[in-house]
Length: 159
Image (cartoon, rainbow, N blue to C red):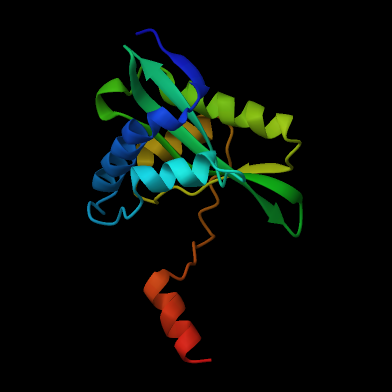
């Protein structure tokens, strides 16, 4: 299958959201996505974009995405965070995921980051195998910690 990797355009955001929803279903969180096409357009293509998105285009449709943003490590400096790498289920196995990850790593090098990092669910063995084959270090002894919107409100109410 032929495909191209390119930076996303604002007009790609409806298809990007479809892939985000597909990932949520795969990760057993089908009702967790709150973001809208309008949010993606505003956050990704405003005066100060919050993220950069690469798309894999095949047969004139978006078949995969890699969404990244920069953050800062107190130990290393500037880091590129890969929020999601998603390939449509029926397009897996054709090299789109690898090509998207290649583009993310090249982008990180262009930005002179000290690290590219991301999370993977511990039960997602196909993704873990893929990342390890690409040379990534899957740090199984670290836990992800976060406060969701309600937890933030609860936290603040106790101050």
